[in-house]
Image 1 (cartoon, rainbow, N blue to C red):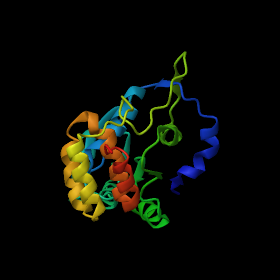
Image 2 (cartoon, rainbow, N blue to C red):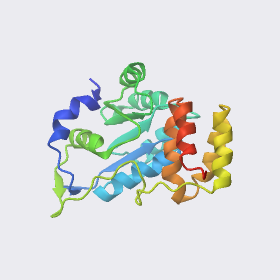
Image 3 (cartoon, rainbow, N blue to C red):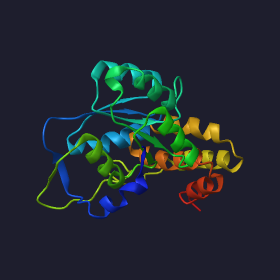
Length: 232
């Protein structure tokens, strides 16, 4: 049965946030997401906890890389080019050595239909985007049977931001271009400009914010967010 985030609420209430590592051998997590910003977010969240993280950008590469490195757990987006996450999970479940591999679906869509589809495809759990470590930790603990190692001093749980945590907007000219495109609903063109921006690390948190609005088709929220950074 698929485990939804809500099922872990009781665990989350008692979850310590000063985790620095886990006991035993290093676990490898394979991440699949077509957005570079999303892949970097998961890498930034998981590597500080001691995980070995590899990332790919589509379902076809997910299947190939899983065969090559035999990860301990997979985190996969559901909607990707070449081969979707749904298709990749189904393909992996047909391979004997991956029939019991923990696979967690990650998606910006929280519709029950997608959660049910991920369950039918063979996913063990579902976590909505933007990923919050405090929601992911109980699932990692359960499916990898982890014993956490805690630091002597409590530290803040990383959020969906990069290590700096600061949303840095691009130059005003770029903001104006994004704003004009968003105002007329040209979201594909907005995404093209964001793809160029995310190549520069300082803009990744900004890009990630906009991608959530685009994925959820929240046009008005997208416009208002960009407008907030425009110089009056």
